[in-house]
Image 1 (tube, rainbow, N blue to C red):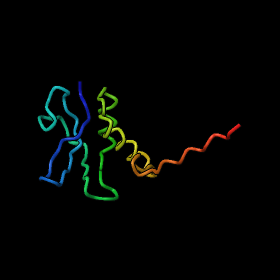
Image 2: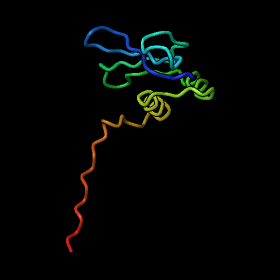
Image 3: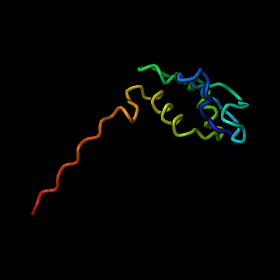
Image 4: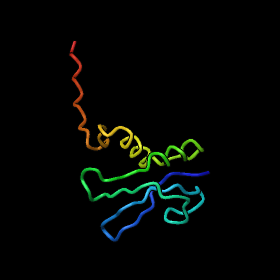
Length: 98
């Protein structure tokens, strides 16, 4: 089974990731089939890039994205979306007392 996941690169205290299609049996930083993009945790805006054509190809062929990669794919397809941690939670309205 093929998974789309992140492979850690970069140096200590500055993690960068490559988004890759890899066999589910291979280790996180091990053998992969194709590089699909990158993700840099230190950049504020536009901190990732994906080749959506190739991502769609792998998804159509049964690849399963990890949760983080799935959110990056959603953000790449709809640039108006913000990361889930950037959206402030609305306070709950108090129930009227009877």
